[in-house]
Amino acid sequence: MQLQENAALTNDALAELAGLSSSAVHRRVRRLEEAGVIERHIAIIDPAAVGQPASFLVSVEVERERADLVNRLRAWFRNEPAVQQAYYVTGSADYVLLVVTRDIQAFDALMSEMMASNPNVRRFTTNVVMSAVKRGLMVPIDES
Image (cartoon, rainbow, N blue to C red; front, top):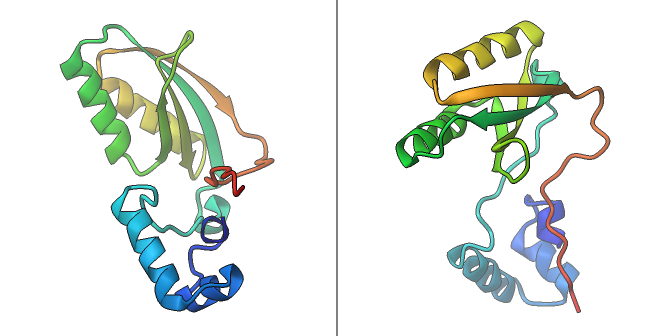
């Protein structure tokens, strides 16, 4: 849990918090990385602080679930830096995206590019994020 809250903690700091040796913490963290439990260590950046203050939740519907078309769209999501998160979902939409841009015009251009690059996209709907109430990637862990 401590590492999720602050990935910059050193092994020594983690060891002190956990009551373990630094080498034991290092081995545990390495095992978690090798097992894929820890996917990567990241810094969470405030989008507004780096000139990307506009956030949008986008629901995307596709025409067909054909593998080549779906893979093309997913690759577009993965390769587009403005798409911060992309989820394949159930319900009326096929995908839900979290997108950040500098302004509404940049968002409009990005969505036009998505549609032009992926003719399998039937439509998308957008919710403009007025303010972030909570932002993070921490996964609850039962520590019992």
